[in-house]
Amino acid sequence: MTPAPRQWKTGPADVVEGAGGVVVNSEGKILLIRNHNGTWVFPKGHVDPGETPLGAALREVAEEAGVECDCPDPEKRFVTNYINVRGESRRITWFVLRTEAVEPRMLEPQHPEGEFVAPSDALGRLSFPEDRELLERVMGSGR
Image 1 (cartoon, helix red, strand yellow):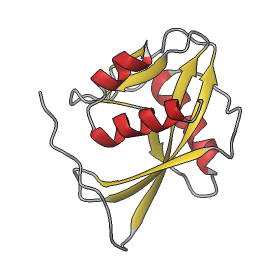
Image 2 (spheres, rainbow, N blue to C red; image 1 turned 30 degrees about the vertical axis):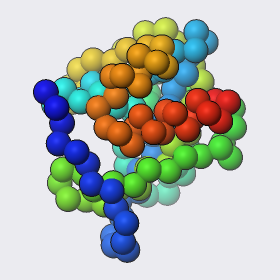
Image 3 (tube, helix red, strand yellow; image 1 turned 180 degrees about the vertical axis):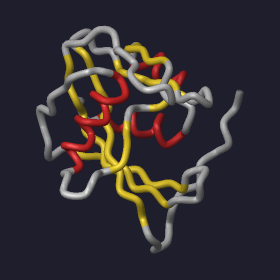
């Protein structure tokens, strides 16, 4: 199943802020989760009122994949922008997160599957070009 391409947001409008993690485990593998619609992505979600983007990223990874993480460099951030299938303009702040986990524990029905995979496999599995570009930027930054 080929997902519909996401649209990039380029102009001013109401933007829904989000945060997520590019999670790397001690084996150097990357956490990917599969949405109920079949797309493979990184864990992410909305930033709740009063929450920092890093706090949201850590919470979302724990809620969606049952993985506890830390962020060795909170100042290293990456940003993606797109319009989702509901027509919302989204701006996601990403953090490189570390974990000792080797298997996710998927906790939400909208994300029934997850896996830690080699970075090259992650590039082939990620469903959206902005996620692949993000992973390339993270790998190029020395993680």
